[in-house]
Each structure stands twice: as C-alpha cells, then as structure tokens.
Length: 230
Image (cartoon, rainbow, N blue to C red; front, top):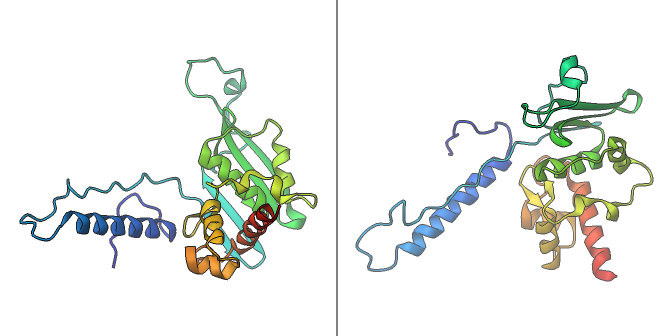
C-alpha cells in the first residue's frame, strides 16, 4: 500500500511510478551505505534522495472514438480580457494578458484550444488531434514559444504530415504519459533489441497503461529503424 501525499494529482499512474522509482533509489542508497560491520544505522542525511519536482499533470482521456488531452490553464476564453488589457502591454507594468486561440471542426470531432501568455503555452485542450496534442505537450513541457501562426500546429494531423519532420521525436519528448516513457527511452530499448510495440511495453512499461500511445510507440520505432538503416 502507498500513502497519497497532499497536492499530488489523482487518477494518474505516472506519479505512482515516479514515487516507486524514488523509493527504489532510496532503498539502494540505504543498502550502499549500510556496509557490513557498520555500527550505526544509515541516517536520512546520509541516504537522502531528492524527489524531483512535480510537473503539471497532462490529463489524457482515451475511449473508443475520442482522444482528449488537456493541461494547465484551460478555463480562459477568447473574450475574457477587458478591453483595456488588449492594448499594447507596457514592460514592467504587470503580467501580459492571456491570449486564447480556438479551432473547431464538430463534424469530424476535432477541437484545439491554446492559452498563451507572451507566446508561451499556459494550457491547452486538444480533441481528436493526437499528433497536434503531442507537439503542444512538448512545447508546454519545454516552455517554448508557439509559432506566430498557430494554424501550422494543425498540420501535424493533416494528410500530408511527415512524421520524421516533427519535433515530437526529440529524445526528451514524452510518448507514454501513464508511465512517463520518453522517445529516448524507447530508442534505447530498441537498440537493446526490443523491436516491437509489445517488447517495448515489457521493457519500459510504455503502452501498458491506457494503451492510447501504442500508435505513437510504433511511429517512434519506425522513425529510428529508418534512421538506423539510412
């Protein structure tokens, strides 16, 4: 059984794996410190293992016929800001206003909403656009500025999208949010001989939570297989 610390996200398996990794590192540190013949038990200071700070939780809903990703501030609407705040922002006079961009295609079940401040994502909602969601997630994680023309982000789920051209294949990009598995971890596992989605799942736990990232895992395998053959 595990205790639930205050302030942690609920309903997500990733933080649980993160706590388990920390506990395993703590046990290893204690065993390494407690050498045979030691008279005194290991102290907290001697085996201190820092738990990395929590990142904002990316919430993913996976169900038949629907694909939703949301993170951060998603409550803002395009017309929330008072007229005075829409005027050019003077440096040093408080925070810049939030900017909201929306795109909706109800007929095909697609929707994207981004909330930015000074071009940096503060939150987004993405429905029915898995590749766009992956790119937005990467930009959110890195605190990177969005392109001035937000519409270019929609092209990731277009018919002419070329996977090799996307930054979603950066080694630090997260593929499996349930278990916190990155592109780099999948690539390393592939180099170790795990060449199928099932093998990657066994080795890294990627795709063994909700299962919604299995297509992305396959794309990563294809991308790095093609790179190795080139």
